[in-house]
Length: 430
Ligand code: PMP
Image (cartoon, rainbow, N blue to C red; front, side, top):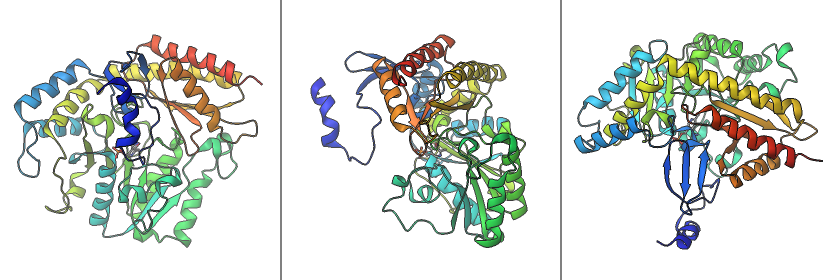
């Protein structure tokens, strides 16, 4: 296909429902860079939306994938067992928090969330689910039923799965209860507890489904005391505490799993995105005694746990689980956040800088404090003109997120900071 045709064919050939963040047509990618069909090189701080934890085409992962394709491709984990799935599970078990030692392998994040909710309903015999306002869990009907990061993900799809209750997420910058972090009494948790008296009977709750750092909803880091109290609440209710670590898992936050930043043990953890080393793979992890109550035939998949995804994911896990690797992610994250924080001091439009490890964001607001998606869009567009790819998030799209490869060099973090400095100076001028 010639270049002009490649540039124009998308509109004609595809459903418009998939909203494109850019109109870039890419040719190839390597490490931190994407190359467009015109030969332009882009610094990629999106990385397939938090998938390529080691950048594009990491040699160890390419090796693992190629070796596996030659040896054994798809056979279905429903039918047979193969070493790559067992080895991946063993490695996950070695590193997973709190005795999460039994696994179900799926393909996508949404599927992992769907499956985890089915597991919770099956083993508790209860139906209700507590989810959180602003969270994103995926696009299948089950995952969309617990998603509330944008009404466009829900429009015209009702009726959803019934008995889903949305509690306020502890989003401190925009606290619904008018508190600041230093005078916070965890009113948002109290609100949920009150509703358990009025709206949703606690004994009906099968699962409390929580993102330990909210991803699509705005890269929001919850306060530790909230997460720990939520863990106690789920336990008191007899519900399963499900952590959706699809975006936060595999070292993104500077710990292998985001739950490890808090003194809390989820009963179930969902992994996706990075876990397959760039191939579609997702994981539901739980304790053996919980998984044992989910009998043969209760759940299944054709492609889940594909050998190539397992082999590549295993190669990735061996690298990102190393303590020195994770320490470097934390260090680079702190360095990057410290530089972002200077923008907060210099520009009133920068309402917040937040993150953990290399999952960081900058929230933009107007003078009255309301979200400023227009400025976020203009900044990301200006950086794209300078060949830096960034993506926004947040319910209003006013949060710029930074998802570099975890092995990113400091000079590339500096390059992004310098481009942001220029963009903020030009675009926020009165
Ligand atoms: N959960 C979270 C926290 C996510 O960020 C996403 C994807 N952005 C999903 C679930 C859904 O994953 P997928 O697109 O692979 O279905």
